[in-house]
Amino acid sequence: MTDAREDERAERARRRRNGFALHLAVYFALMALLVPLNLFAIAPGTPWFLLPMVGWGGALALHCAFAMGLFDRASSRRG
Image 1 (cartoon, rainbow, N blue to C red):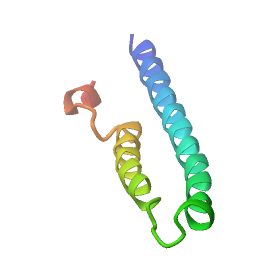
Image 2: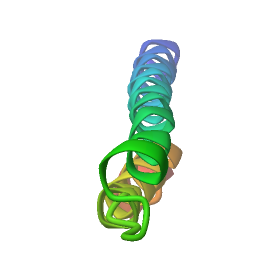
Image 3: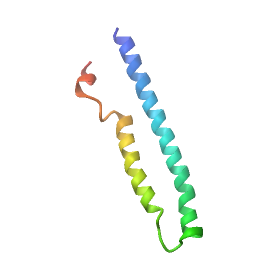
């Protein structure tokens, strides 16, 4: 019974890490497009790319905490 529970927890942790890795990759890919677009093409004097960078970065930080298991219930950690 405990092996099945541990396997389930490990699978859940793997899915969380994979979801976070995908979220992080999309974030960096989009920022790699937005920053040069802002600095060289659209509005060179106005750093508007900081708004999505900081806003999305906050959501990314929460996703990181979730992926690390910081929001798990204390009772589920005890078993």
